[in-house]
Length: 107
Figure 1: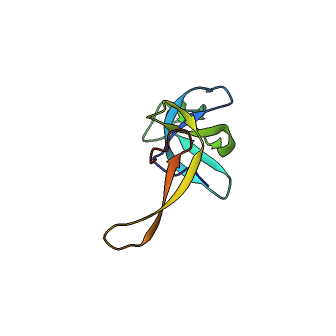
Figure 2: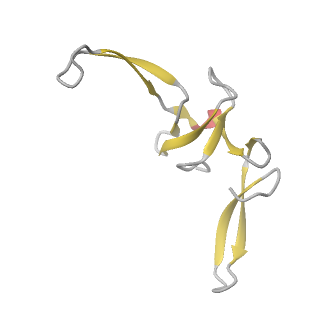
Figure 3: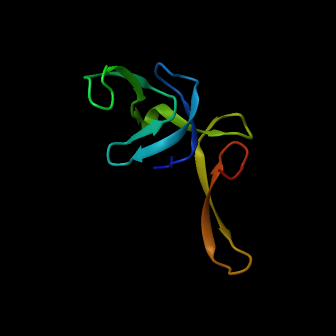
């Protein structure tokens, strides 16, 4: 999976198309992610001791990974993720970083 927790993503299809948000959770086995402020559902709840009235709660639901792209703040657009191997100066160890395919900025 190229999308990770705390990435900023843009929705490219569905009811929330064009909106951006931060990834809260990633479910790699189901190919789904949970994005802050995107894909709200209404949940009807019965009254409990914590919430005596009950009522309708709104919360985020999971989105399929194919419906979002990583958002690059420098390009101000959604973009694909590329990888680049660089060597650290002090140790000389190779490390793999994620970059924006449009501008080359580190994600």
